[in-house]
Amino acid sequence: MRKSFRFVQAQDGAGSADVPRHAIIAKDLVGLGSGNCGIERNREGAHMDLKTLLDTPPWDWPEDAGRTFWRILTDPRSKESDRLVAAELAGDFTVINDELADTLVTVASSAREPEPLRAQAAISLGPALEQADIDGFEDPDDVPITEHTFLTIQESLEKLYLGKSTPKEVRRRSLEASVRAPQTWHQRAIEQAYSSGDKEWMLTAVFAMRWVRGFDDQILAALKSSDLEIKYQAVVAAGNWGLDAAWSPIVELLSDAHCPKHFLLAAIGAVGSIRPDEAPEILVDLANSDDEEIAEAVEEAVALAGVASDEDDSEEDEWVH
Image (tube, rainbow, N blue to C red; front, side, top):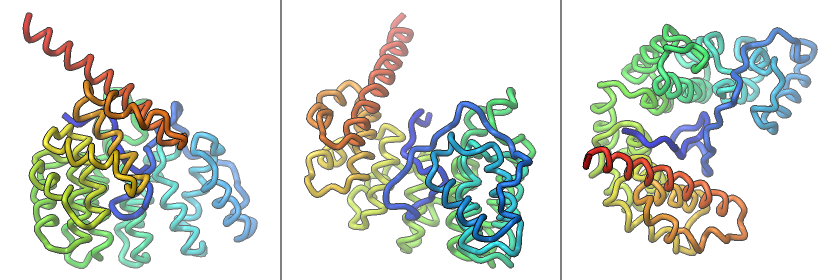
């Protein structure tokens, strides 16, 4: 099964951000409000509202933030740059719901829309898909979208990926978003992407391997890649599946003085997942790092390693008895 932690961007796909963000699930999912944020008064007001929201943690957004994103996305007079930001923010758990999800699907599927906007709309659907896939629909309060919307998103993303006229970037983001709720067609799609020889498609494939099982050999090979983005995604995938054969190359990253910070953070988490019993000792030096983010990553990894170790011991005791 997949690990309970993920080194994932909230709405980002492979290669769309240098430093990954952890997906943040707010305690209370906020629906689309009805308040007026001022975007109908003037275009500058819309820009300023977006800038403020972009710089504000999602859990501190006003209740009508989702309505702001919806208005900008559906208003043909909005600047393309504003719509791009709105498409990114609309996928956050604090605002996403059926109406916003439907809007993102419409934008992603429209050949009249700019390619970058379509690609962003597609990848922004990923977090909601994953949450719905994990929690199911027995309790509607657990997920931000309904089962009908979930199925519509899955069908739309598959259609976009398979579409011969769909631009490459939109196809890539559609695959990257859709694998967060794995389906049978993903195995073949990832195989084709990885074996294509195209670095961008290979990057997408390795990104997707963190959600779809069965690619251990490819992950190990990608850890040796000279392409840093592909290698980074392989570290994340190896950690997510607890791939023991990846232990040595990932541990080596911890002592590499030239290791980029986002690589180091991913390696820290992966170590805690792959060998939870050994993680505290391996990470002890980094626990006292002057870099607060690194120290916190170690603390989290060790805590998760402790939970994983306890679960493993419990399963072994049950098997013995």
